[in-house]
Image 1 (cartoon, one colour):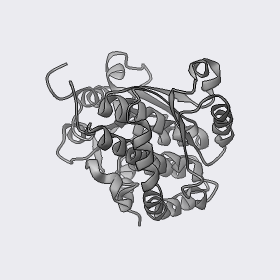
Image 2 (cartoon, one colour):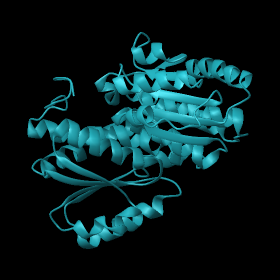
Image 3 (cartoon, helix red, strand yellow):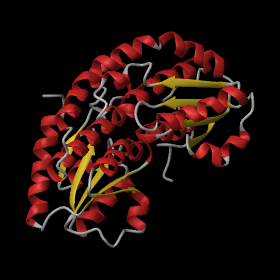
Image 4 (cartoon, helix red, strand yellow):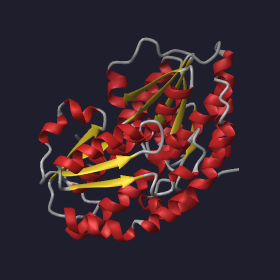
Length: 332
């Protein structure tokens, strides 16, 4: 069995038993902040595309301060935080008070995130995880996606569950090859964009997670440069007016049904931009997966690949990915 799946199954079977005792599952709600919130997007996207269960995602602080009235004993709330982001811990506590069945996804079994939730699942969390292909689906994103596929099988009669498990099995090899394949490109990227302080990052489908994480975590948080995440389809409804030959733009091309959305953006950039870079999941091997599930693994491949590129840029800029101005420095 693939890494982490046994723990997912064991915990989710307990959660399902509780929900059935309450009358069944009505909705699934993901709560988190920042990169942890972004990591749930492929799972949410998958459930909304393939399932019949109501699925929502909330910033944890918003969930605490504006808790939806429909959170009840028939709700599964999944809260994600590597350690114990205060807002996420509080969101889980609020969900418990509402009677929801809560599952904490955390890097540590003794964290407040894990201990506040009714059940918890641990994932691999070290910053260097992206350098080890065997761990490509063992992070928070991969764990949430495993939960989503399991929920589809259990509640929605999903027929591609086995294909999904096979995809998880293949991902370490696909990512391992891609990681080696892009090393020279990452170095070239680093030298080309080391002086840029404003970015646009674009993607679509399940790969939207990559633009969100890159913009808020990798570029703004870790490199202290301005970055705007833009959906490839939304690009033509405002943002493309800022395009010129000097603006740094990073476009991720997906495998799957939304690829034409990214290709349209690429055609425009090739005509009117001039300082853009394209990372294509198809060229990196994602098309080797069964087409019934491949699109849901876009972010799993592109997210660590993007970190490889941006980390290389950080090295050239002599700006470590661990640098922070404010985060963890004081109470805010």
